[in-house]
Image (cartoon, rainbow, N blue to C red; front, side, top):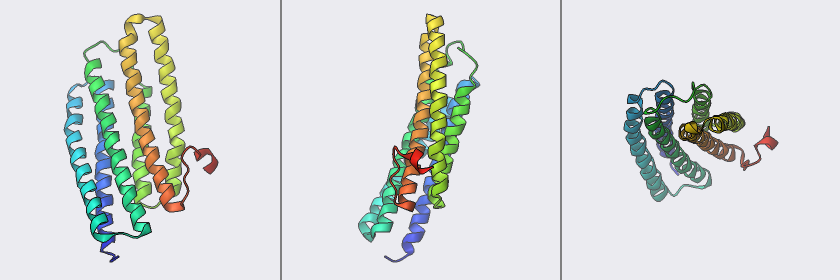
Length: 221
C-alpha cells in the first residue's frame, strides 16, 4: 500500500483527538452545571453533542472509504479497525455526558441534597483517562494505556463510595430518595465514561503488544 495511507491515518487520529477533547469538555460542563448549579451549562453540553455526532460520522465514512479503496494489509487493517472502535467509544462517552446534563437539569429544579465533592473528583479522573487513552493510541504508548486501566480501579472505588454515602441519605430521609438516586445515576454515567476509556486503552495494548488484557489488567502490572 502506498504510504499516502500514513497521512490519511494521521488525519483520522487528529479527528479522534478533536472528538475526545469535545467529549471531555462535555463531561466537565455537565458535572460543573450540577456542582455549581448553573443550568445554562447543560445547554452547552447539548450543543457540543452535535459536534461529536458530526465528527463520528466523518470518521466512520473515511474509514469505510479507506477499507474499500486501499484494501489494507494486516497491520493497517488493525489500525483502521481500532479507529472505528475508538470512534464508537468516544461517541458513547459523549452520550454519558448528555445523560449527566439531563439529570442535572432535573436536579437543579430541587434543593441540593449535599455538597458535591466526590462526583467532580471522579469526573476529573475519568476525563484524564479519556485524554490519556487517546494519547496512548496516537503516540503508540502501551505503558500509558496500562495506567488508564489501573486508574479505572480508582474510579470504581469512588463510585462505590458515592453509592454507599447516598444509600445512607436515603435510609435516613425518604424525601431524599429521588435526588439521591439521580446522583447515583450521575456517578454511574461517569463510571461508564471510565469504562470506555479503558476499552480504548485495551485496544491500544492489543495493537502495540499483541496482548488481549481484557479482565486481566492486574496480571499485566
